[in-house]
Structure formats: C-alpha cells, structure tokens
Amino acid sequence: MAATDATDTRDILQWLDGRSFDDWREQFDRDGYITFDRVLSEDTLADVRKGLAPYLDADIHGRNEFEGRETNRIYALLAKSEIFADLVAHPLALAFTEADLGADCLLSACLAINLHPGETPQPWHFDDSHYLWPRPRPSLGVSTFWAIDDTTEDNGATEILPGSHLWPDDIIPGAVGVDDFARGKARETDAGARPDIKKAVMPAGSLMLAKGTLWHRGGANVSDAPRLIITPQYCPGWTRQLENMAIAVPPEIVKTLPRRARELIGYSIHAPFMGYVDGRHPERALGL
Image 1 (cartoon, one colour):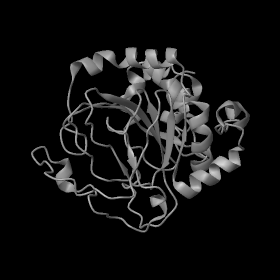
Image 2 (tube, one colour):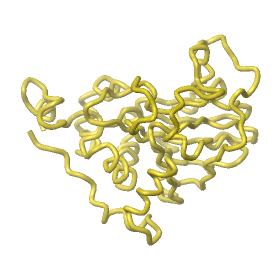
Image 3 (cartoon, helix red, strand yellow):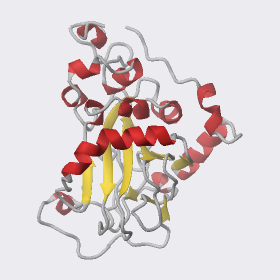
Image 4 (cartoon, one colour):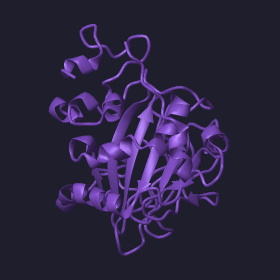
C-alpha cells in the first residue's frame, strides 16, 4: 500500500528568514515552540473569517473552564469550509510536524478558538496528555496556532512555559483537572499565575508550532475585542485522533479535499498496512 510523501523543505525557504531548517528544528527541540510572523496573506485571512462567520455569529460559548465560558470553539473545520484544508496541509506547518511525527502523521483535531473580552486564563495543559505515558518523554503531538487576529499582551495570547516540554511534571500549579470540565464549576482565582510565562504575541497571519508536551494555556482577554486563532493539531499515524475525523468530515466532503488533507484525516496508511479498509487503501473506499 502506498506511503505518504514527505513535505519538501525547499517549499518553505521563504519563511525561514535565511536560517536552515535544521537550525529551526534545534530551536524547536530546545524551547518546545517556534513562531513565524505573517505567513498568511490578507486575502487568506479574509477567507478564513468568511468561512467562520456563520459559526461565530451563532455565538455558542464554552461549556466549562477548559473550553472557556467567554470563548467560542468551532470544531470539525474541514467539514465547514475548504479554506481550512489549506491551513491543515500548509507546507510550513507540515515540514516541522512530519519531522517530529513522521510523514504518515494524522490530523488529531482542528478547531477555531475565539476569546471574547472578559475571558479568564485557561488551566495549564499539554496537548498530548491523553497519552498516559509518564514524563519526561518524546512528544506525541505537534500543535499549530494560526493567528487570525493579532494576538497581544491584553487579548488572550496563548501563554507558554518555554522548555517545559522537557519537564518531568505531569501536574503543575493551576493544571487542568476534573473540575475544569464540569459545567457548574468556575475557578475563582488564577492558581496558575507564575513569573516565567511567555505570551505568544503575534501579528495576524503568523504561525506558532508547539510540541505536544509543552505546558501552555489560553490567556485572559482584558481587551475590548475578541481574539481568534485556528489550531490544527497532529499525532503520529499509529495513534488515535482526538476528533473522530471519519464522522466529523463526511465522505462527500472528503472527496472534494486535496489529497494531502485526505491523508491527514485518515485516508492514508501507516506502514505496512494500518488504516486499511476491507484489505485495501482507504481511498479506494471513496472511489478515488
């Protein structure tokens, strides 16, 4: 069964600022995150906002402290507009993701997060914590954060703890707990406040990549305007995705997606044959 082709790093030279891909990877391995300014054009940002408009207009707020009670979260984005396939399969994001997770990596989740004024800090968490393997360990995920609005000191820019992907800690003060997923429980104070926080301040169109083991959280929005990001998250091809993409993205929509996007949601093979359908490559089930 055919293997997935890796992204050619020559396709991303325009964003590397004269540095080598290996140099950027060393920084990623050391700090647990990297950022690239103004990757997306104004036209692309406008298309993203247009694709999200009907869902943002519905103004459905989060159900608990983790989702954010003053936050809109929009899931299953590949089923909502073709523009999100371009973000999911963007060569800059995939070059670093594939280098960490393999060319047969999968899209684990893809959602929009829109923080309204008055939102409070999210509990600290790391995105591959559902893999119950003790830390320290290699990351089993890469999360990407596309800034659709400017992310600022005041409007809830993602807060990170540089180097924390290497920490042995499974729990830190202010970390997410069971109560943070309960509808009626609200945190009265910020138990996660600390002096070593770095805010991922970025102009609109920028990209941050973070290791799955990096401790981070959404910041408080003390501004007078919302803050919107898109976060595609990836996992190795042999692990289970957070979002059930086979149901989230119906086959009639899958058929319209670019090949790389189809591979990422699961219409692909992890060698030698994990992911087959009736003994054949899953794309055969689509009639492609």
